[in-house]
Amino acid sequence: MSWESGTNLLTDIEKHVTYDGDEVLVEKLRSIDYRDRLPDLLFTVEVPRGVRLTAYAEPRSNAYADLGPVEVTEVVLEAWKHRQWNRIRPFCDSEALIAWMRTERLVEFTITGPPEGANYAGYKVPCELVFNGLLGTRSRHTHLALRNDNRMERYVYDGGL
Image (cartoon, rainbow, N blue to C red):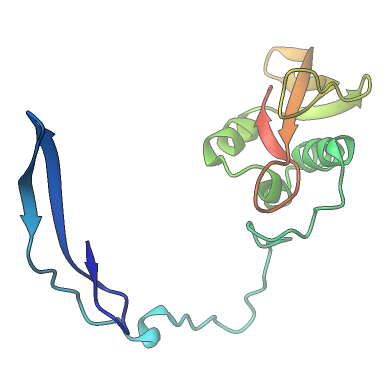
């Protein structure tokens, strides 16, 4: 590989394989055409008057790094109970899961014990969830799995619902 000094743009690539003890050139990219930089104006958004920010944190910020697994479980479940989806997003980047949560009416929850951490890169927080739906009230015992081995350095949802 060759790089252009000053811009650090890739200028060419050669791919070699060893065959019967000899190095053989099998592919060579001789030139790369780079597009011009797009103007910053293309990424400017004008927000109409009266529009307000509804998110509680930037998804990649470490604003919640001080919260432990029990506290994050409480925030997520309380937000679910009150259908505050933007409060869940900093801890769950799965829109599919949030869409599923919208179909389930969580009316009550209880954390039933301390976080369990054996054989897992995070914690599993045991909890009892109570739902109210078309067929009445039902409860479910589950574990909310949370891990904080991410660059945001905060606990995020990893499974269990």
